[in-house]
Image (cartoon, rainbow, N blue to C red; front, top):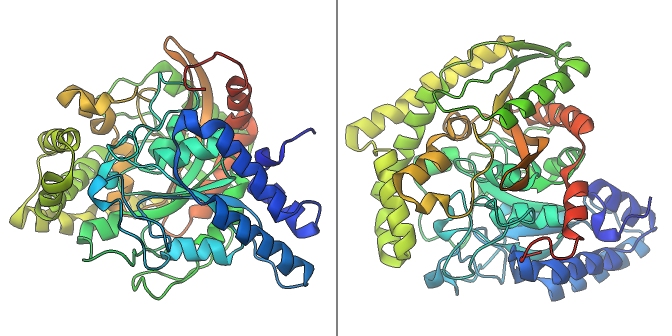
Length: 483
């Protein structure tokens, strides 16, 4: 197989760098060359770490030559989202007023990746305050989807999703409070797993105050990959304990094997939103792939995601209104202030006692699901009822926000309940606006992200990896003004 170095998966990279078939310096150079070739059109990486990456690559090669122990991610090029602290770099969060907020130390996820041997090659774009499902901001501008400008790159980890699928690094860091890992995965055709609460240690040394309780319990750190197997490779390193997160739970990535055949609840329920035929086709392909892989798949009614999702996001909006709105009004652009105003209309914030009562009801919703998962450990669900939306759709008033976030009940409901959920491509669709991937979601029990990734692997084996189709398209001259 004639594969360029930058096209290697994380697992293939580790195999070659550990064996000596490939130096880390060459691996990093190839990824930086790829970034140089495509990033000007995509604007996915907005802060290059090229010099630090080359220095670290040379050090890792010297360590191998000296016979020192090598980490499980030895030599893997990765990117970090700009809302997480990396020592010596700005944690701007896409906000001009924070462009000089230089991190005094590494966040746990950055430390864990580097201790595992990964090499950070750049920092990826996010919308202002990392609070949109599209990626654009007044500091760095828009991130373009490598499939073309007919589809948003997603958000808030849009830079990460676009980068990893375009070949800028084998892995990309992102985070998710309502869908910010799974939105860009769906937009760009990447595979990811939103971990459950307490799984990955999190904290920013640059932060001046603690986050609200819902932000703490709904926001998680994770990774994008082009191949599902790379999540099995990389997530054990990401979940390594860090004492700076007092609520992290140190548990292994894989627990006891489940009883087989593993039951999967299959649903096409979209709670009144129209299910697009291409999304339904993706769901049916994923269902058939799991059946053929030996899963016991049953189409059943799941606990009410409309109730849990709406309650959760309205509660989050209550916390945002109380703790974050003043900062949005003070240092946010007019565009982000307008978007938040529509958020508050679409999801009327719970405040005061209502907010406390809905935060308490979180346990009720989670209990319904954990009870359901005793019979059906996995659930195969839609992610969005329609193919991914066009850029700036959420700036088009209530109708736009309704399509972008209002219909995403299967997304933010899992954040509210703290459940793991993977996103994996199950179809490449030829739509009137252009070709784009369609992802499905796999919900797993608490602490069993490995089961969701295992199911994603089976779907990927049936469908294939989206990157091979994407790279062929990106190589065609004149396909898009941005490619």
